Picture 1: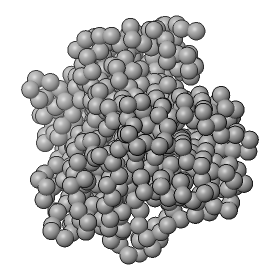
Picture 2: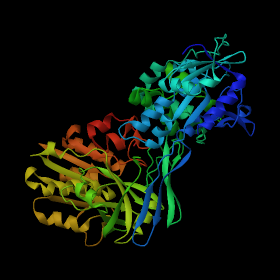
Picture 3: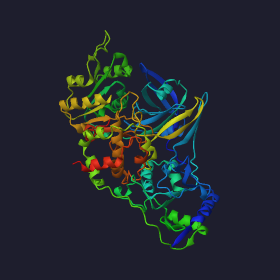
Picture 4: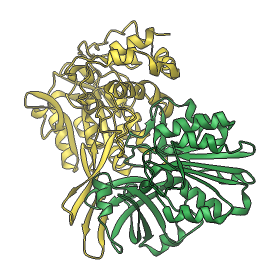
Length: 337
Length: 277
């Protein structure tokens, strides 16, 4: 399969074709004047001139809240039912290559040893179509973490913008099957693609040096941590928009007689996250929680799962209410011995 | 679909009041096949459900040498433990597990064992103690140093008396200053100090400790003074957990997920960890 092209006006047919087959087509759409990933019903819903959707598309693989079991408490027994994850066929269109690279991190955490099928079933039924970046902003830093505007990790089909459409490159078996299945909407052409936007690599940042620094136990006592994280208000917005953050809570909802158990997104930035029943809290101040998140991205994930914990999408920078910029901390950590 | 978060249903067969707000539940699996096939090792933990309220993590406080039921001991301190405390004999609750690693009892054959626990830290140690007592001839001298804030807060009072009466266990009990009663015959003082005074020999011995994090830190110091090598000191780090299977992201101490790689560690391993527990 070479020289595949999708005309701009045929996007509507592609969406129709996916929906007709019972799938949902997730794309950057306008919602209350923000561009967010949500279900598109037709091409007119899809936003073209965006940098990055406000939310990460992880919520379509790992929903913000999902029922995992239901229970009815009766006089002499409990009726407990596990939920079957339906995992509707899903197409994510317009993902950026940076966030697509987060899938290996999510997959790793949900499959090491025991397997969370709520996640794997959805991911297995999802095709990720990334559109290589022709625009960006000063929060983008994919090149600093070793990715690029057309990097292929986690991408099933790469789209590159051209005049009047996209050059289409299936990259995985899933991607090739997708293009084959919807072959009627594609045509054979090889137009010139638009130049890509490469964010400038932040000169002071050295990912290997950061990891080396974080591997030394002494860095825990480094006074720079309280200083760097002083302005953090612990809102957790960075974790909710981050495509690799995966932490969750398990809670029961309902009455004493009937209810459901849910997996809900949680955040390591919240003070209750690690609070023991005794009142003891291992991460009892905000800088310890911030330090944990930074280490999770640049040490725990690379070490434990051989995957990137940070993909450089810059969402945490754009959304932070106090302008705590993770790249500034990366620079600071690269400088230190 | 295999749902790793779905608990097994268990029936409460016994409830024992241990101390103010602390109780033990004896649990039997409803599924006959599971009841017969369920095995665990001392030191492992589980997630216990009060349906409608949620799940909490406790160690399995009974020894694997006594099959038929498992026990958990907890302090009523929040939503879930409050709910569990409200259940009666015959009621149904949930259990998932066993999770985590265990105390390497087989490596301890022929050795003396010193058990040191504080307050509600005794339940995981109790599983080891009964396990060792049920295989008594395989081990050397046994010493138990146990303390709580007050006499009333000591858990497993009946069992403490049983261990004391056996003759093959040295039991040292203590309460914090001010926690004694007029007829208290044990020690008065903090666990690490009382341990040093008791002075168990480190020769061919291992130590097992659990209690509040601050107590564990000082007990490891005291054991060091007595000559115990870090490799022969074991503890269990019970951080807050929600999933129990390495996914929810909160029990980590640095890059170590306590639920997966722990909760049992030697002091040598603990000293290598980030100071995050």
